[in-house]
Amino acid sequence: MRVSEYYDLGVTQPSLEFVDVDIVRDAQVFVDPHAFNAIASDWARECVSLLQDFYGEVLAAVRAGDRARGMYLLERLGESNEAHLGLSSAQSRGSGVATGLAADIYDALGMSTAVVSGILSEVHETVLFVAGVGHDRVSDMTINIIRRQLIKFTQEVCRLYDIEMVPGLDSGWMWDRQSQSWVADRVELPMPNGKLLLVPIAVVRKSPTFDPGDYLSHYVLPHLQEVHLSSAHSRLVRTRTSRRLRGERFVTKKSILEDDPKSRKEWNNEVTDQKPELLERYRQAKAGESEPPGHDEVATNMGTPPPDWEALLAAVLDVPSGRDHADDYHRAVQRLLNALFYPWLDMPKRESQIHGGRKRIDIVYVNLAQHGFFQWLGAAGGVSAGQVVIECKNYTNALKNEEFDQLTGRFSPFRGQFGFLCYRGSADDKSTVIQRCRDAALDQRGFVIALDDGDLATLVAARREEGPQIFDYLLGRFRELI
Image (cartoon, rainbow, N blue to C red; front, side, top):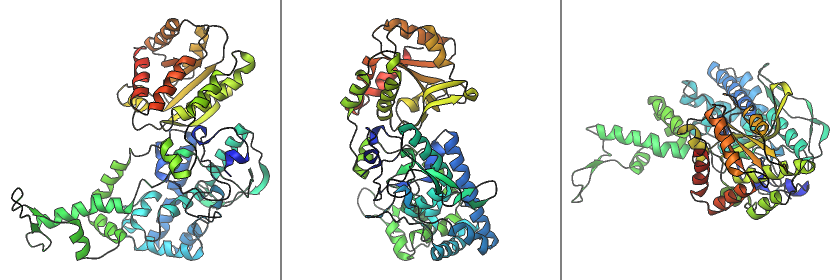
């Protein structure tokens, strides 16, 4: 039974910001620590700081030969069964770090030239070089290190969906940046079948961004091929005999591996130590690979249903206009937009407070797009859109200038200068609404695209096609502003 079913949330995975895991078995997806770097939020930035601080302490202990400190750090990376992510096929078991394994990992780190030389700097890079550390173990390690942040995320989700939490539970070990030590506390968490930690869908992947085989095949071995080709005496160099390529010298990757049998990580360590710029090139190539998996991939990997576009749209259209149903409209719009703009926009925060709580934003999304309209906004459109602001107006009467001023008043250089104003549209002249949005843009107060019920239906139809239609529609609406 999934979390959404157990707590009768009335929504499925496409509209949820967390991984809708089975409360008994593990979902075979993993937390990718690299993913946090692409999320423009205080929550994600703290996760990055925790990971960097902890891993920096581990590397410092290894390089100093401080085994006691290293073991203290690694032994508390226990199994993270509460998140229900990983490779366990039955009851969640996790693949954390026990005492014996902590010693093995400490020794493996000490034998890695990438670690000792200082080339390695991030926890997700460990999988490239360190024996015994795969993406499942990195995922569990990450969950432990950022446990405090996952507890905060879980509590926010529980308050949003009215999920009951049990107070006074043992938090488990949490990394503390101030004391640079493990701490524990008493916290409240949901208990459907033991403690439950919810994880944002934005940070999980089926396969990690950093992969030792990928690094070996596309960076390490091509470099070795060049080394052999530049050598006048390499016995691995062969000459092509075909008429078209006769005389061309070449070296196969297979011949390199067979000539000197090593594990993938041994090759990665040895060659990166000699040529550290290979790792830097790999980092740069992977920097843009941070977009979460799409709806189809999530459904395939987790066995969850795809979006029911008709039901999501109908839930919005069926809400009566008027102040009495403002909250119903707000919730229905968020559920639709969660699915409609995923994976480009994610990590929604409802009724986010700004300016010391003096102002509220109905919904704020983090822009994670690596392609499409939301990526185009910043890359080609020149619009600051690290976060996208949404305001919902379930009015029976026409919008006035105050509604547009309210939304543009939520913009800032740091938060972003782009948002959507969702409204019913039955009492509005659309050309007047567009002109007010254009006025705000021309006055350099930010860019607002107003979406009435008909526009939402158009976007749903475009998304259902899974082609360029949604990009074309949003681009056309944006061009109305300029």
